[in-house]
Image (tube, rainbow, N blue to C red):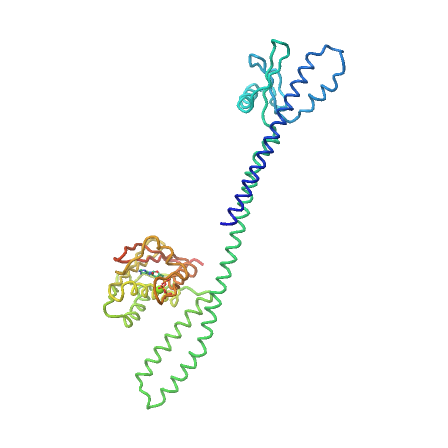
Length: 377
Ligand SMILES: Nc1ncnc2c1ncn2[C@@H]1O[C@H](COP(=O)(O)OP(=O)(O)OP(=O)(O)O)[C@@H](O)[C@H]1O
Ligand SMILES: [Mg+2]
């Protein structure tokens, strides 16, 4: 914003300055034409052989830039100067030029004798015209420059953010790796001990495998994840089954996905699960632990639409986009990262789209994910 204001300010200052230059030059050009007209008049009045006409000729010759047309009292063209020499005999062209000149400047009236008048019309020289355009060209250049600078600055910043994001994800996956493998080893050791209750070990195994899944997600996000053709309904049902065990029984899942059971899509399963889980968690939060979550899949030519709806508190229209910003949260214990991660996984890793399809305050929300059916590398 600051740069833009600065650029426009420079443009305005330059416009004002050039304007005053143009005014001065215009006056100068009018004087030149007057001088020329005076010269012509003198030349006409001089009887041949009387005095030195070289100075007068010099004055007349000197004007080589201002285009002029001299007409008599009946508007007949008598003389043309500094116009396109190739078209000097083209009446239509000359008339057009004359009209232009008449609009631009009042004529200089030259009294050859007391009752013979000539009108000298003229228009801005090429130099003057160029000077007139100059500030606009300058402003355009400044704006283009600012735009390039802004674009470059922005992409560097984004690249930096990317780097941090990827680095953190990789590091997390890496650091989780060691304790997870030793946990697995401990569990195996414990399983040989007959005194340890086996059902406790089963639960620990579940938690360790959950930790493995989490580490796997982070490692996928930190690298270039592979996409493969997956049965969509089956994949979503796994997450629903996982969620059902962990939320109150007042949250219903409309998991009737049988009609979509054959739909396939190119996805990276661990990352896709993460997306669905994030959306479900948000839906559950929005419903305060009571309501219904519906999943619907639609086949739309090249895309599959996955619509996830809840009966929660809804989102105001003005926030449809901001909710995806990192750090945006309305929850006491929220990080505001769920949706920005979700968006990133869908858009950057799957080349798809995610957005709020519809939402009504206190009624519910539908998020739509659009995924390509075919994989394009
Ligand atoms: N289904 C929904 N219904 C109503 N509001 C929602 C819904 N999903 C997201 N929001 C709003 O968008 C905000 C951002 O969501 P996001 O998942 O990015 O962060 P969070 O859930 O607040 O925190 P985090 O996911 O990092 O724990 C939420 O705080 C909430 O206000
Ligand atoms: Mg969330």
